[in-house]
Image (cartoon, rainbow, N blue to C red):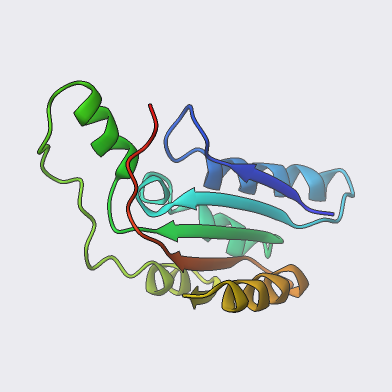
Length: 143
């Protein structure tokens, strides 16, 4: 069974480097399992270069990137702090799968639950790092 690291709170962007670190530690300790990181597209931008390390070491990391084309959590914090309209929080045009391929990863872009299931199962069987991009809709965070 794989280890899953969600990004529910705390340091923005920590999931990708944490997943790579866990996978490197697993390998050093003789543990063979996939490591799954679930992260938003905004948070992914904080440490995207971590997937290069994973690909270079052919680590069994599966990054599932929820793509809503914005820094949703930062927008929610701006509303909480009564500073709406902060510039630079929309992320149109970033093609995450292309970035991941450029770093040497396998990729999949999915729209449906069925496509996600197929891509995820394929990633679990892969011998290297996979980035799965899941299209989602922006939602206000419950802060």
